[in-house]
Amino acid sequence: MSKLIRAQLHVNGWVAVLIGSYIVLDPVSMITLNGLQSALSAGQLSELRAPGGLLFVCGLTIVFCASRPATVLSGLLLSIMVYGGYGSVRLLAMLLDGPPPAGIQLATAIEIGLCVLSAASCYHIQMRNQMVPER
Image 1 (cartoon, rainbow, N blue to C red):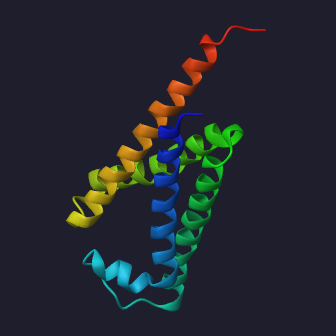
Image 2 (cartoon, rainbow, N blue to C red):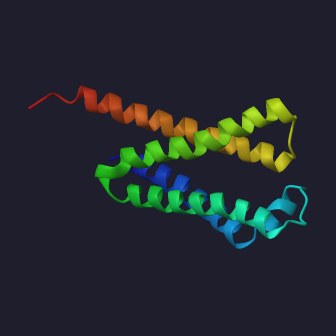
């Protein structure tokens, strides 16, 4: 498997791990960093931490997939789902609600970029696998 694709999976995974752990450990700081309200109830904090935990676990899974050639495609597909899901919903929110703070706009661009790169790598793997002659 290409070292570049495996490096890409490491980047995808560690970005998700870092952001997910930040949301889980300090959701108030994450909210105030983006200029949003910081006085949150226990229920609201829980609603922030839960997707942070999911992002953390998905990131660990993506990193794990980078270490085994047989699971690289799975890691790319999970990357597409995670970053494509976040990025596309943020774009939809921008259309429905108007532009968010600059930090969230930057996060959207990064998420869409990671999704597109993952999709391109996935396509590359599929094309390469189709060119291999059958035995």
